[in-house]
Length: 388
Image (cartoon, rainbow, N blue to C red; front, side):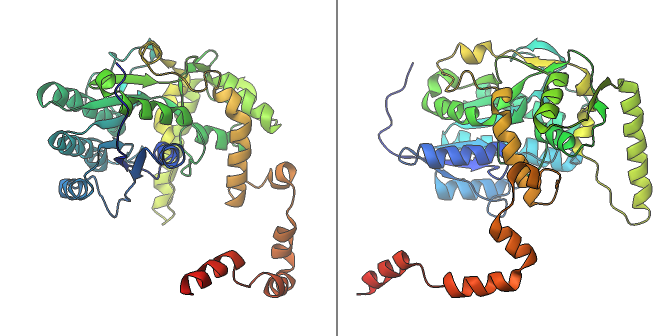
């Protein structure tokens, strides 16, 4: 049932606003709903979810109408950090929301699910010591939220995400790590096998779903949803499509068996430890822990999502349709950061001021002093009118 229109501006707290999901949500609420919803996205200096007192003090001060939690510890964090951030932080936020009687929207992960096809919201891995710290903490969070919903009256919604794609991922992780590896020409062959499919999550569409969930609490309270694109994507096809967009010669269409990749991973881990003896810090990509997933399918059933009252704002948008935009965005960003230089001039040409900055800094400085250092006229006129 659709709720009545809100009569006042709502205030929400977004935790984890510096990440891809959090940053996308913050941008959405800032640009799409400025008159309806105001979002506070405190940094970890203002609010550490590892400390219960921080959570209570901040939420008491702000008095929000809802809380969204997108925070997560790094994928390769040790047990203590994963437990404190991903699990204990989640529980303490939930306890505060329960006490204040406000909704809590929690972002979870497909890492809580086994491999397989067409997995539903009821599926999950068994909780065991063998799970990675990340998967274990996420799975425990989901279970505790369900328990608090049933026993403490917590108004919560869990949103499970698969492989997320979108702009503004400054950490180069997940899908963007795969993209970066291809663009950097460091993937010589296909590290997968034919037909391995995975589900993908559109970060931009997710913002519309979160907004809808906040507006329709009666329908979505106490529920878990898979938020993924309708059609899964075969990994080898996606890799070869990226290769085609970038006009590269690699990776070649040769499928490397998993035992070979596993041996290579073991060698890299041993090499990293060896180099540490000489004071050389080597940090392998945390995605290596999911290397086995490159060889096993995992697709999430999203019938529950699309049978709800939520309407997909861009039903034809998929990772393939947004690839051209993502390619331009990330190659530009990585080029500016000198992470990848191959495509700078070929893709984007050269900028006259950039050329002067590189090769004629004295002439550029003189030119700017002569033409571009006077106060902005419009701001100066406004300031003078205030002083008058």
